Length: 303
Image (cartoon, rainbow, N blue to C red; front, side, top):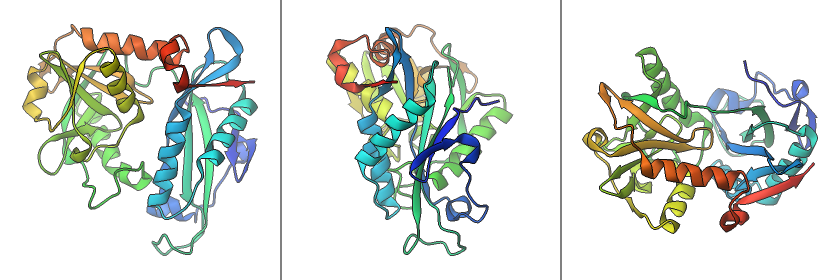
């Protein structure tokens, strides 16, 4: 049972969560014509009157770019201002997950993106570990990741997540925690809602943006951290069989943070993960405001 935060940002202001309602005729509900983001925030361990928000500028930029793919304009400063007011209204005292959402709010039956009203909302919930930090089991999904020529995969378009939903449920109902999707060319793309990394011979490898992945913010953060720690980072196509012989395999995402894959299909993967562990420890110190080298990645909001 989710513990939702008491206030939502809805129709330009903070309102009680229970009052933030949309009509059953809302266009986005029927056609998936929305785009969302996912963000994490935690109370400052050093100052209980401050909340730490991880890379809100990057999240706001991606949401606005996603809105543009829906042929609507959403300004970054509008998103950032709403996020600040939302957090101040809710005064969280535990880690939270925020879900900003831009969507076609019109009431109508024609699938379209022109001559239509749009709106922007935010809600949130308390969230600890989305996936087990000890690791997850994964299967290769029978579903194929969509192509950018059929869906605008550079954005988190809500309608695109039908494939993720099918893949996730298929995985769980067949005894696994998570699914890995291949793209239409048979290369590894991503998990149901996370990006993927592997380590081979000291190299940190991840499918490139040409492999129909979402350009994840945690993904890009991990890559930047790794480079600054002196690691070699390679973006390239990844074959399925590489995952079975890799030294380490792990997932990244806002909700998942950094989560190792402990089992792939019937294969138990190596439990020694020195590179992943060093990256996870560094990312944790950054998100908790303890790393001065990445102070610009953290927004401190005083309650």
